Amino acid sequence: PKKGLKIAATPPRGDPRDVLVSVRGVKLGDLREGAAVGTSSLRRRAQLLNLRRDLTIVDLHGNVESRMERMDRLRLDAVVLAAAGVERISESRRVSQYFSTEEMVPAIGQATLAVEVREDDAETGKIIATIDDGKTRAESECERAFARKVGGDCFVPVGAYARLDGGSLTVSGMIASPDGKELLRRTLSSASNDPEALGRKLGEEMLKQGGEKILRGLVA
Image (cartoon, rainbow, N blue to C red; front, side, top):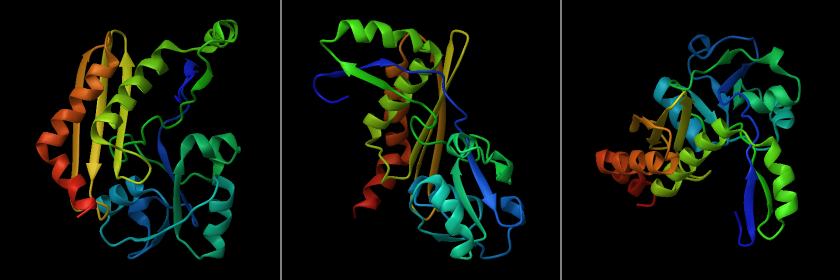
């Protein structure tokens, strides 16, 4: 949060997965050789190319509706979007494939909302706190700690997904080169009492295990 603001609530998370919307309703493995797939995300680009080297990735910006509309106009075979975004515009019927979080590690905080309030506004903070979901908050804190450690943002092929189950928190991270040829995935688990520590630890380990080299290559 910016100076003077704080996160007062993290409501329950939506579906964190990525989805494929294709022209003929086929899955990724059934797309034609050299198929054109639209996405503006380096994270998705890297993981798509890691799954299928032959794909032609087309840079595609805009909101969910405009990207789906431009799929036909640009003669793309498919686009990859966030499941939560497709659900919000009531277009889930058009989804051809839901990627598991192992196949396509989500973006940090994908399908989560954070409600900010002024730090000095205790009354509003107390009201907003009633919609806070402890599970989602722990997961998002863990993912954000990972992102801070590795320096991940929308312009870097980095992803992380944390899951809280009972008293155990598990987080999976991904660091990749934009062409998908180098892709590092790791998973760590611990007690759920310190989500940020777990996220930082995963980031530290992945940087030591090859992630730092991959990220250095982005600015070389």
